[in-house]
Image (cartoon, rainbow, N blue to C red):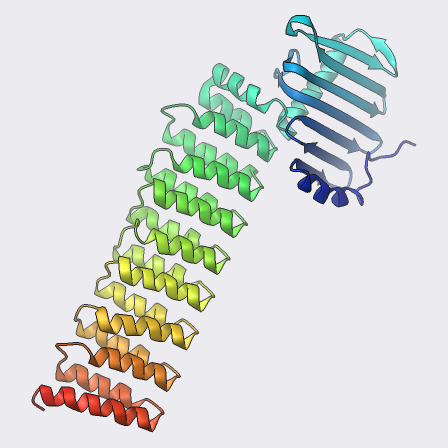
Length: 425
């Protein structure tokens, strides 16, 4: 009985860090019966399959172009070669393809160590190998992408990509697609769909979505599909990079801003979410529905400092109306850090346009602060305003009454009396 695997499964994970450190790429899949491994340093690609007692090794040096059925193998460049060794239930096969004079491909085919004519049976076997390479690897993907586009245009390439399982190959195919001018919205959405469904690498999906974000910037449907696909990226930094590219390169409107902020809310890293939301406020629409989604995303941030930074950006750049400022205050009330809430409330109470509804609501949030010193800072910011009337000053008095420190209450009441006296009562 021959060994079922070229490398025991227990050893394969130990080799992954070595491959990563070498600067190459490594792929490993196993369903318990079939094992697939692939490694590449950018020049040489080594592929191994094992299924029960059957095993196959493939080694590719340089660039190759494999026709759809394997009937034509072109080795692109001197030194390129292609070799297969297979040990299966029906015997051992070996095929070596080298580059002959003038660039023609030379085939050397063996069965059980005996050289054979590369006949119809051998070519049928090789066609199955090539189909699997097209599906599972990026070997020959660049040349194949050009051929698919020449034969069937963008739709032909997209149809072929739907059958591909290799994330790296899909990146190559979609990269070739995006070089074409005048792609339709449907074709771009289809590219996003296939990438979102099949590219498991966070960095790979990020690269594709960022590239697509540069196409048809005013296409609302495409914008929504990109931000939805970004929500499937597990890496916070890659997810954030896609949303940053969307905000930078596409026109967000009231319809696309809401899914954009929902996608941002799904980012797990507080700092990345802060970066995305703080920058988006300069690009996105400021209608109440959009800003409501913005504050919903802000509320999902666990870090008080990041939550506060996002609200600070909204206060500075959001051009908030009354509804927006009231929703902003609700979000402030959800921050756990008293000092962060104090900083934000103090800023709003000093600078917000005069609006009795907003100022009254802000004092309501001040009353919820647990620190007397923080409450004092906020009330002083409020009393420093010009144009306060008696109803608002009575709101300030009610706020002062909630402060636990008697000395702080006395000090603030003196300031309040001066304000009241200036109003004639």
